[in-house]
Image 1: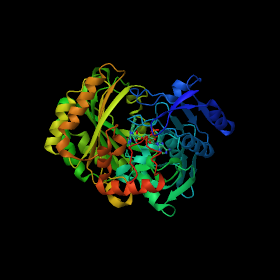
Image 2: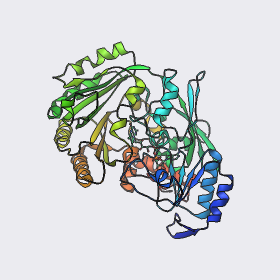
Image 3: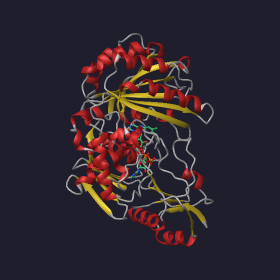
Image 4: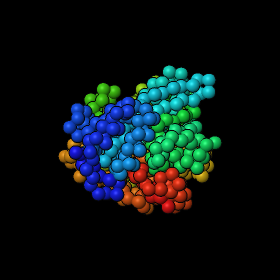
Length: 471
Ligand SMILES: Cc1cc2nc3c(=O)[nH]c(=O)nc-3n(C[C@H](O)[C@H](O)[C@H](O)COP(=O)(O)OP(=O)(O)OC[C@H]3O[C@@H](n4cnc5c(N)ncnc54)[C@H](O)[C@@H]3O)c2cc1C
């Protein structure tokens, strides 16, 4: 007998026989406490999350997902859905309930004639790039290759190619999704269009997406990309120059500013290791020669400690942050969008960056605009299209030691920026409560999403997510 929790909260005893019935036809793997691999499969990317599900259903295909959903519904279990396991708040694992784990579902199929790709939900960003970059094509996605494609897409998807091609959801043509009733449906512009609107920004709320279909875009394979780095003491001057410079850079250029203590990487001279730095990291999604002309003023600003912005394979650039955000470290985030980098925002940023203690903390500021802002706001549930920048104030320690102090730093920094917040990107939320989820969508879209939730999941079966309660 294993103890499980119903989604209304009361404790249930679960007869092993019920699990055995599920096991009889399940093609993937069912992992319970005490089974080999249990600790490995219950772990998520954020090491500060430590939950113990009663059952992990490692699905091999759509039929397994349908059976897992129906099983959890029948027994009345809490269910968490996991693809890449990178939810900041650890929403893809629960205590006592069931994890519907899609990480074994790795199929990727490129259709060169139609310039589209189908990817199953367990695919990670680097795995998708591996298949698409073989043909000089890409789906715009995030900055770290081990991030799950599913969770990233369902919240929006911001990354190196967004100013040229838009968000990850802007490439989405259709999804296959298992509803709370255990039915497989397709959502696209033509079919279940209301659902297709909702999954593009609030996706995890309506069902388990098993497969995505994306439009592909030409990228590289060589791009002009990488960081230009200055001492962090010069942060305010660098940011003021940066703010003015980016006002008229072409959409091909996406930049991210990162403040941190320089990591001990081989590409950096050892005398820089541990030194507080500010870097402007570029990715030019167009001809390298044009990119060199565009980034020249940045490279010429002040006296950079080092300039690593050069001709690089796109897949290598995509992996540049991989070692800075490994699985198992302790992470805490506060995030917000701001309209512009005003003098006040810059001064707050420069001041708080100097207070970073941990050698592992690195916080990115994304530059939005370009193609992201050209899609009409009503087109998708995602709500930050008119934002200028997204702050992701990430506090990181290797273990629990020093975590509380670093977390306080993140909170204080975020609070200081509060007068300038314009919204928040849902994928960068921790477990911050209903009002923050509402902030991510705005009142109007939040109301529309609640209606949609009532239609597709009236019992709120899928609630281990940035939850939208049914209207
Ligand atoms: C190191 C790191 C770097 C990141 N960089 C970026 C970035 O550059 N750009 C960006 O936009 N975001 C970025 N993110 C945020 C990222 O988009 C979210 O953490 C996202 O939720 C991760 O998806 P996942 O599949 O790995 O997560 P999971 O933890 O598996 O899931 C996250 C949420 O989505 C739901 N979900 C997952 N799969 C499905 C599915 N198949 N069907 C329905 N619901 C599902 C889960 O229930 C959960 O609520 C980053 C995150 C990390 C940890």
